[in-house]
Length: 272
Image (tube, rainbow, N blue to C red; front, side):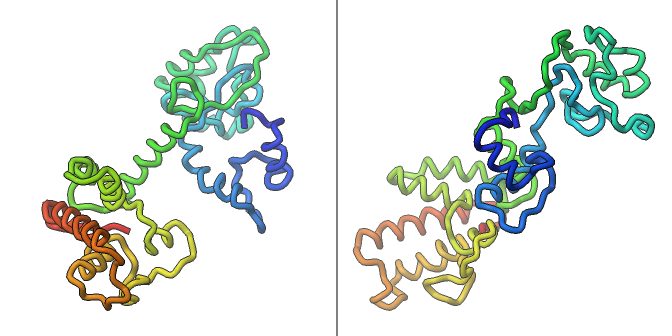
C-alpha cells in the first residue's frame, strides 16, 4: 500500500483489485495462495492500520482511520451533510493549523484534542499509511503476532483450565533435553500438526487418528491415548516404535504431559 508502483503491487492490482485497494472486500474465483494469505490477514491489518496526514487530500474524515488513539473520527449527525469530507477541508486555508471552530462542530471534545495534536504541514506532502502498534509506524511480524495472540486469547481458541501461559513457562523447566522441552511447549500451545489442528486451519485432511482409526486426531488423543498404549505395549508388534530409545522418549513425554495435566485446576484440558 505504501509502494503501489512496486512489481508486487502492480501484479496483484492488475489481477485482484484494479479499481480498489487490497483492503476492499473483493472476491476472486481463482485466487492464488498468496492472495488468500493477504485476504486472511486483512482483519488483523485493519486493526492496526492508520492514515498519516500530510496534505489531507486523500484521507476521508469519516471512513479512514486517521485520528490517533481512537483511530477513527466519531460519526456524528454531520456525516449526513458532509459524507465526502476530506481532512484538508477541516484545516485552515493556509494549511498551517486546524480549523478549530469547524472541529468543534464536527467532533466530540476528546477527538478535538487528539486532532489538534496532529502536526500539519504547509508542504503538499501526500498522505500515507502507517502501523498503529509500533513507534516507527512500520508493520513488524512481532507486533502483528502480539495482536493476533491477544485475539486468540480473547476468542479462547486454545482452552485450558488455568492460564495456559503459566503452563507453557513450566515446559522449559522440565529436566529433559531442549528438543523435548520444545516439543512439550508445542503440545501445550496447540502447535502440533494433528488432524484436528490442520482441519481448523482450513486444510482438507482426514481428521481421524491414523494409528487407531477410532477417534479424532487431537493433541490430547495422540499424547494421552496413543503414546500411552505404546508405552505399555498394547499395540501389535508391527506398529510399535522401532527402538527402545524411542519408547523411552515417548514414555517421558507421556509422564511429563500427564504430570502437568494433573496439576491443572479441575483437570480439564482441551487442545485442537
